[in-house]
Length: 330
Image (cartoon, rainbow, N blue to C red; front, top):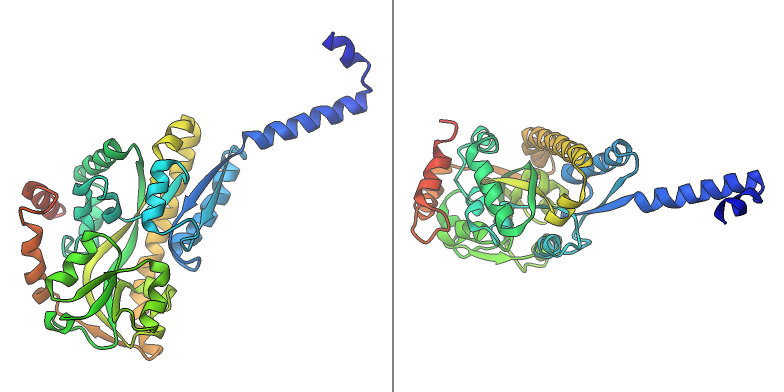
């Protein structure tokens, strides 16, 4: 029946019908991956994702298309973490402090003064401890830690110098809404004030908060230097952006395409890490050129207050885990 019907269709019409069917099939075969994050489009973290999206589309022969949603357009950090578990987004940037809401032990690496320097941080991300924490997070949530990006070393901005712990007493400082970020200001007598990243500029401008803390590239990208007169190089946290994939998404991608996508995302992270480090090397002078006062800070008095707290019994990691982290790279 079908073959006789086919025989009476003119050849040109048959070709057109076949092409049309092929186009529909191709369109249906393209899977869209939603990548959500809270950072501005001008940041290295966002820019590398745009290039990665092009590569994913090309290298999977249009089987996958990654759409990137910056600047909290799909929600703040809490919302996109929830969306990852609900399956409303496929990939996100987030920090270990937010991962710790599901798997507390991984929050250790987002706490202040746990890394000596960049080299110590980098050594952790190539360690057995990293692998154990990634597995613990995946077991707890089903979601997968794909790669990591150096977010930068966090510094304090305010309308005065912050040179010693006493300078932070009573200071209302914006922090992300996670315990890793509130510990440092609480320890030195400041008033940590959680606030969505997208609200920070206006919060500073309107005096809702007195200060904030972020790496130098983020301070520039967020234009916080326009509403803060001083940057104090406290270097209190060496911070990470993790790239997470929904466990459901991970399982639904076939092995070959998954390897392609993960490889591209890891290359993107390496590229962003390099750019952030390059920016940090030049931004102190850039901020000075804009008229911002930049202050070197003796970190030891801050460390003397904070580090004993990291070894406390109320922390969500064992003393052995803390000591393992400290031993890496020595």
